[in-house]
Structures are given as structure tokens and as C-alpha cells.
Image 1 (tube, helix red, strand yellow):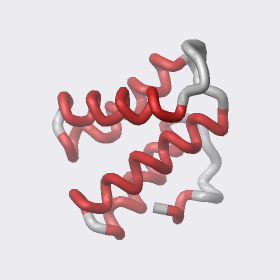
Image 2 (image 1 turned 60 degrees about the vertical axis):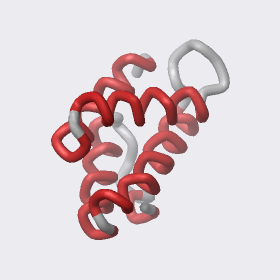
Image 3 (image 1 turned 120 degrees about the vertical axis):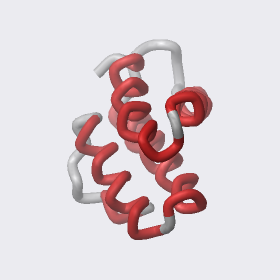
Image 4 (image 1 turned 30 degrees about the horizontal axis):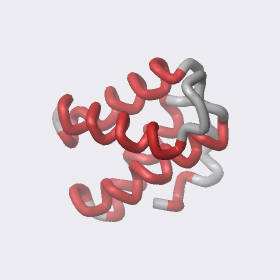
Length: 87
């Protein structure tokens, strides 16, 4: 997936919980932190991005809801669900 596709998919999942602007700002800020270059995000970078976003969500949503949202984010960006319980 391209960087725009990954970030767009994640924003779409997070927007109902954080609002469009906060979701977009959060995804963009975290993507800049995990990316090693300007091109598409590599699978380990996508994994790290979802993990970072999930850790931040706990404050807003609580652990149980965050786990469900992290699983939804993983699905939206084509990651397997085997590590979905790490939030």
C-alpha cells in the first residue's frame, strides 16, 4: 500500500472516535516518526504505526475498545491479526 493509502485507511478507522482532524493529525505525526524515507511505508513501519496509534488510543477509549479499534486498523491496512492484542 502507498503511504497515502495506509494513512487514509487509518484516518478512516480513527475518525469516528477522534474526529477527522485529530485522527489525521495523529496518523500523520506518527507516520513521520516511524517512516525511514519518503516512499511507501514498509510492513514493519506500518506495524509500528498501528502500534503507536494503539498506545495513544488507550487514553481516549480504554483498553477493551482500543483492542477492537487496533484490530480494525490492522485489517484496514492488510496486517494479520496475530499481534492485535498488543495495545
